[in-house]
Length: 521
Image (cartoon, rainbow, N blue to C red; front, side, top):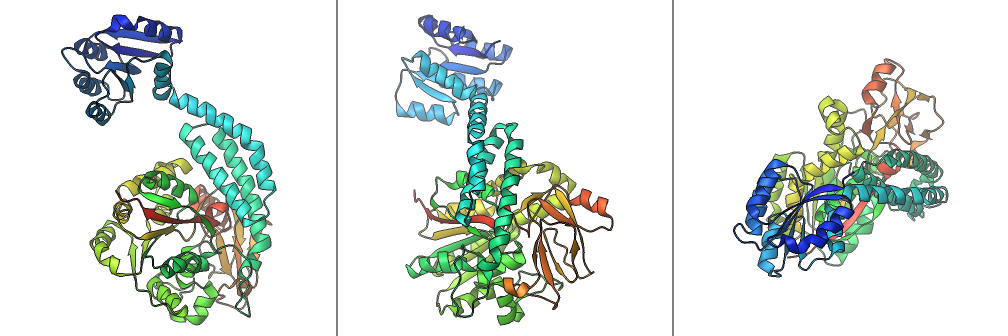
């Protein structure tokens, strides 16, 4: 079985006999020609896996031949082989999208390495990645079982996401094993949250906060105010429903523009925009917002938008901490909103703090639920991330990052919550005023048939508003979602395999909080 069909183009091809024999012994078929015209003819007759191309030849030069080959076989990698070490030649070759650049005299191992990088890369990466994950599988399982703190769970989640991204890039069958391990981790994480969450959010009489992880109301106090106090101008970007795996993909795109300090923090429950994002901007738990600023809080059963008062909430937090910082607030829902934002960008430098909310990821998540076409386009986790990245590359966010990289702003990039791909229905019954979210419910006389849910019977102890005296909250865990017994099968079929939020999972609760500064070029 051949390892690949190669074309070697060199006007001194007779001097390369030893290299040809070496490649044939390694299982490659090698076609040799001595000039660019013959190389082009060969490419018209058959498809090669890789072309070695001499740069300095009589007649058509290597660069001229390269362009003609790319016209015929654009997908075929071309490795330029040359005696020249002139920088402009290198630049032209690289600009023509060569696969590699070798300086004569080349040795066999250089040639073999180039072949492995350009022909066999996928198979090698797949094999090494699969082996690496298999070897680490037991260690990850032990790491999951040994988790005692939120920092332990953050480390586990980082590890799982790293392997998820690596395996996804190889289309490895190990992805299924990782999915099961992730489910195992989420079961453990949900138990951890059940044990500790009420202590984290318990009201305090003397104003002393209990020892707890950084939660949604703490973001400004822990991350933004210290930067403002140090005289920094801060640009806060909140991408709604933005998960850690999506951040890791984005980090690869913008890493060359910024110095990045990555951190994770914990969303409050429910992991929904109405609660978590309002908590970020106000620096208060939802119940506190409802009591102190009733005009700025909208209950679940009210029809008006739940996040229309974000700028006033930011103002209340600044005033409560007696801060005199100037700020601007912008929400981007579409391309028109993005254009308006960039038109105002230069004027933002007069503010100490600029806040931008980006809604696309959340809109994509909901569109995937409602639209069969979008569900097909984002049919799994990897495709969902891919669409998110495609959006970024062509969105105002890409333009915004490019502009910010040339400024002195300290950029805080975060989100209000993540989401999880749901698969397992849990029956629930409530009155007609029960909210519609699939990952959490609040209402009177809620009845359910699962022991895995998290119940808060006294919302005041979790600093959550209670529209009625008998209101309780229930939260789905893992990949569960709530379904009503009425028309149950249709409901389950419609919502199974959708991305939802509001409940308890690593994906929803452990979310990025990233500090960046531009690398000016």
